[in-house]
Amino acid sequence: MKNHKLFSFLLSAILFFLLVPSTTFSQDYYVYVAAESEDEVHLIHLDGKTNKAKIAKTIQVGRYPTETDGPHGINISLDGEYWFLSIAHGNPYGMLAKYKTGTDELVATTDLGMFPASMEISKSTGLLYVVNFNLHGDMVPSTVSVVDPDYMEVITDIKTGIMPHGSRITDDGTKQYHVSMMTDELYEINTAGLNVNRTLSLKKNAMKMDGMKDHSDDSEEHKENHEKHMKDGTHEEHSKKENEMKEDHSGHDMDGMKKNDGMKMMHAKPEVKPTWADPHPTKPFVYVAGNGSDEIIEIDTEKWAVTRRFKSGKAPYNLEVSHDGKILVASYKGEGATGIFDLESGKEIAKVKNSRKVTHGVAISSDNRYAFLSVEGIGGEPGSVDIIDLKTNKRIAVVETGKQAGGIVFWKQVAP
Image (cartoon, rainbow, N blue to C red; front, side):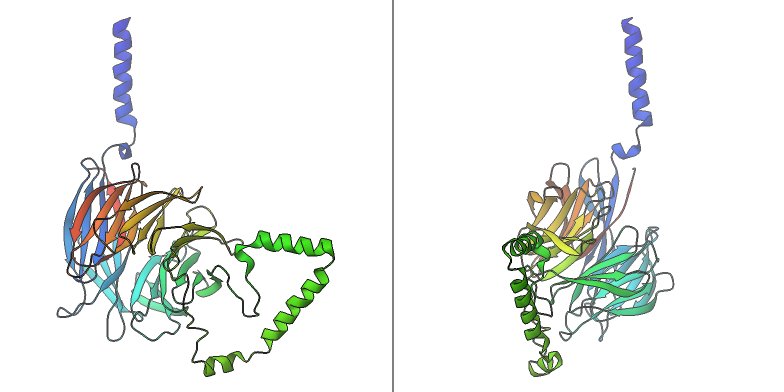
């Protein structure tokens, strides 16, 4: 009887190891990261069994060998066969470069706008949408370039805000989101229509053009006040005051104000200074990094309103929502750290110190196990990729890279 039980146990154990998917065993993880001040892209390899990581390959990029071209944004094609890189500098324009994954050979290039930055490809249209950040140009509205990644041709340029950044697309591919850093706005683009659908002010007490307060952050308070006015009979008087305020502002010569004030209205000092936007994989939310206001902002895209603000570390720069939608990982550029948030509660559940200062980009592995953070470093310091185990929220590895590690993207995970 005992032998029979032992045999059954051994048989069950063997079947378990044979039938359980290979993802439960060690995996190899691969990430591409751009070193902006070295004109290099590194392929980083993490051994999931040993938690050891290294540079598997270094690719020289750029078109002018004697100048720093500045590789900035990086992303992968939908089929994983190619990777795309925005080259920020140029005379005067930057460019988009297409490389073959695996061999990392250059396939094609195309010119973009001034200082092209982050990008992503839509599952719906198959087109690539890249923001032209225009870091060194005049403080004027910039564009989102829409590129056919197969033919490497620019289809159109969509006019957007001042210094746009953080081009990320919904899982169904129908909407692209990015922020305007200098006007504190979130932009939504219809990927098929190739037009801006909506814009939303991210300021806490945003004022609309008619001079009325935008109640997106205090809708409950507004509702309570409205009910109070109805009960005490002052609703009519309250409405009259609101109309008077509208009339006061409606008479302003907006064009004259722009001419006389040197476009001061457009160039008002940003409060939120948003630098990144990432939609939730399954819910109607977009999350924005408030680099100037030290917060993560949640926007309900059905209500088109700010619903929550999470207090963060200093100067969040990039962020990414995990593929299961449970956590958010944010880079704190101002304190050399990484914040990990539980999205249900909106609380920061961990803060991990990075290997050096100026934390930049975030990429999460497809199994939600690891977060890869690019860290720029200061001056002549090398950059790095810090790897955090999202089960323990501990840093497990550091890989030194070329100077100013910035754009980063997860490529693949495979069984060894």
